[in-house]
Amino acid sequence: MKSTMLRAALAALATTTAFAAHAQDAAPFTMGIWGDMPYAKANDAPAIPALIADMNASDIAFSMYDGDIKDGSSECVDATYTDGIAMFDSLAKPVIYVPGDNEWTDCHRLNNGSWDNLERLDHIRKTMFASDETFGMEKMVVEHQGKPAEAYAENTRYSKSGAMFVGLNIPGSNNNKVNGEKDCTKKSARTAEQCAADNAEYEARDAANIEWMKASFAKAKADGDKGIMLVIQADPGFDIPETEDTDESRMEGKEGYVAFLDALIAETEAYDGQVVLVHGDTHYFKMDKPLPNASHMLANFTRVQTFGSPNVHWIKVDVDAASRDVFTFHPMIVAANAKKSLN
Image (cartoon, rainbow, N blue to C red; front, side):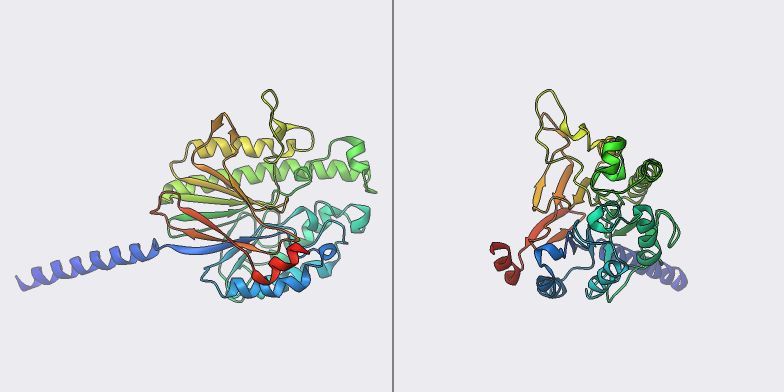
């Protein structure tokens, strides 16, 4: 009799402990999003310490950086990437890095030093994605689509407290898609062979990005996650005004994002939770619901565009899987840098 009562008590204790652990796992937390800085042409470097100090003084569990560790008019020298790593490692909490166009897609440009941009992408993978760990003084292990230092290692995934965070290498400059000879040689010394290689790279990476995104939605559904945040660098055409007869997001120069956006819409429609797409590229803080268009709003989809040079600020995100929107966004204006923005 006593044995039976003991087993029942232990079972009840185990149930209570498991429930408490689950509740703790689902506890609300905060994270940060930022990107497009520092730019040498805007003299952003003196503003970075105040930004880092502000983020370090916060209660964020980690942050995600949505690309462009340099401006689009400076050379893609190796020091650019080591400087970026040093900046990320000055954060107290983990930093998940997502590549931008300024550090690889646009490196072929004459004012960037006429680098082979695919070699620069390979360099990023070998130096900035050489392990499964994030940057930051405190590091954490995240999932990667590719093996460390290899193709698609930069595509990441991390889940916490009922929410999933996905990093995808989708940069500006039309996602590295080249439209003909004029586009190939504009402000560039690229050869026809290099541009053909760029297009082959775009097609393969676009397919890999869509595969990783779909797999992430499937995992989120299986795990019961209530929200998904996707972080990319490019503005895929959201800020081009639409007319009644034309969807300008599919115009020339933006068609490199069409397949991804179509897949994103389909996945969002089939998902009961909240979906957020975070990106940089245009440097203004914005939050709206642009998909698929003004007449047919996708209610569970939100776009957030982060601050960028010369506005050296960040966004704090409250994450609560039990809340209505899961993600709540707070623009964090760094007081010392607000004066810089006015100059």
